[in-house]
Amino acid sequence: MFKVGFRPDQYLQTKLIILYAKDGDLDTAHILFDTIPERSLVSWNAMISGYVQKGLKEMGLDFYNKMRRSGFMPDQFTFSSVFRACATLAAIEKGKQAHAVMIKSDIKDNVVVNSALMDMYFKCSSPCDGYRVFDKSSERNAVTWTSLISGYGHNGRVDEVIEFFNRMIKEGFKPDYVTFLAVLSACGHGGFVSEGKRYFCSMIKDYGIKPRLKHYATMVDMLGRAGRLDEAFEFVENSPCEKHSVVWGALLGACQIHGRLDLANVAAKKFFELAPENAGKYVVLSNTYAAYGLWKNVDKVREVMRESGVKKEPSCSWIEIRREVHTFLVGDKSDTQSEQIYEMIKELTCILKDVGYVPDIVF
Image (tube, rainbow, N blue to C red):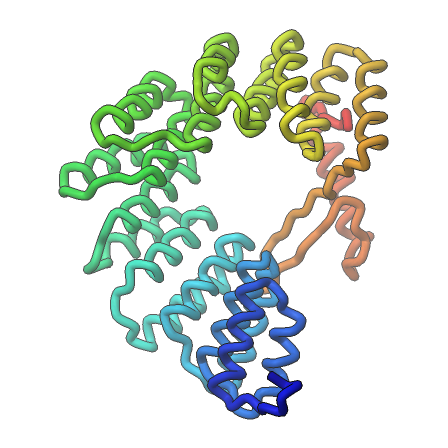
């Protein structure tokens, strides 16, 4: 376009920003955004959404704040991205501020925005606020109900998950594969194995929904958490997902929890044949061997990781204090108060050990 001497107008520049942002090339999108003479709400939304979808949630929220300072009023697309970012960061104060702005902007009920808002409150461990959003929604569909069910499942409220799933059916809404995935996950985490197996069968027989890979993996995880490892192994072998690493990874994780070294070896062999680049499961297998004191096996696993070029990604956590999100990596000392933070960690560790806590520092 530039080679033939054509100079794009504002409309075309905005389209280019959307193209690069959706493709994940945010550097190019940012350059175009900076050079556009007059920015529109659409161009702001493209940048916010692009950063959030790329996983750069803080940058997305930063663009949202810049947009507000520039005098633009957010729309439903803006709020949807902002709530998703706040949900991932557990930044409930920023989410509440955005919610207040949404109320003032008089945006009408929107299923997508309300679902994102509910998800934000539930993931920030505020189920009462999440339910309040649902209760005040004048427009509901299967997505709204699924967000509610998934939210309660995220907070470990299995009784509410089952209650609202039954209400959803009673009020004439048809659950989809995502709804069932949320229900199965909640049953697995809550130890409701019989109920979970019943819902899995109902999904197939009553609703004609063909189970996907995640459904099978969730069922394996459910059986594994309950200690029914032989049943989980049999389930995997008899399912059409036997050639997928996800289900073997779920079984491997359960073997570590319950100390089944025999099945761990089988699951690990299957898993690494299918996904040799996955670092997390190498760690799980290493920890399983360490629990039995098989240090030669631990060294062998680590050697395989080194030879394969597999590296474990550093863990990351964040916390919101006084409306500011602080992010920490393992061993990170970049924070200005890092000395005080590590001193406090030492004090807490001593207190925990005094009451019988034994840290797991195998890997």
